[in-house]
Length: 167
Image (tube, rainbow, N blue to C red):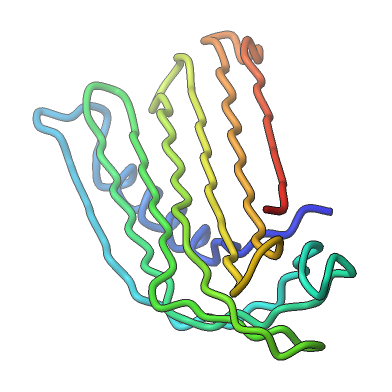
């Protein structure tokens, strides 16, 4: 079972920024265009922790603030997008046991796209941890996704590695 803390709701915002930048850009850029945004968004998420509750698992309500940073650069016929998500002050409570948890991690995405004809790359790395008090109830999730598309639109690299472990 894959459970994700970070469900980016900023995709439409990023697409709007990208479309605006492309519209204003014209056919060529004399200089790079760069836009950076920082947002701090309150969140609440219920996540299943399979190692909680003595190994029986339980749902954990996580609450905190999610720092979302977006950086968009347009230069030399390329759009580069870097997105960074990081929970801050995220704490959780087991809905069965009442056990307390801390949530930490970093999720990053980096994309490189051509404005006209060319290869593209997409990289997504997610490190997500829910740490409980005591032994054997910590959930560690690591995901790496990388896709490369050549100038003809063919996928030449497609990596998808996910590990989920209890410690």
